[in-house]
View 1: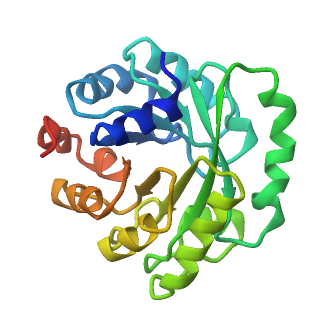
View 2: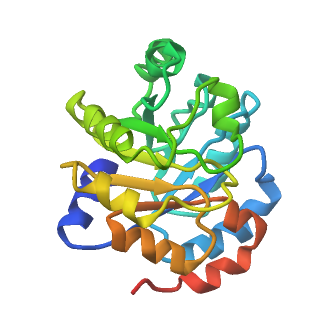
Length: 243
């Protein structure tokens, strides 16, 4: 399988769109995986992200093993904690919560993860993670004990994203949070994208195909959708193709 970062870069050059389906291990029962992934395989999804803010030990690995039986799409860990690391996946977003100032989530958790990561063959993808406020407290905000950047503070969002790139991040992830009341506005995505020379991921609050297309048009290289599929799997029917 091609390296995930190289794959994303190649699709950007080819002007193609990437869509990741985010699966929370605590919300996906093993007996539901087959039917769910069948719909993923028939959609335009290009990646599967696996992770959540609060997941019990061992649950992530069990889910990834089951997912591997039903798809050839790259499975990338999107971990909320080091207990979610498993070498059964293809890669991991090595996240640093650069929008916050809690040292545990800027570098502390990453240091704790090294001993586990060095024993795996996972593709490790340094990712600058930026939480944008969405009108309610998210699990990320609660667990990390950090405040998101206000949507009105465009300069701070742009500068934080650029700082992540200058620090050597390979991806920047703009996140409104799981179950966000509304997605990140197009003008924010555009402003951030204009600052970057690396791929931009956008997720949180995207519940319709129109909102997804809007994110792409604004500059997102990869869109992540999770809650919309959890609440209504028929959403897959809208994703047979992307314009």
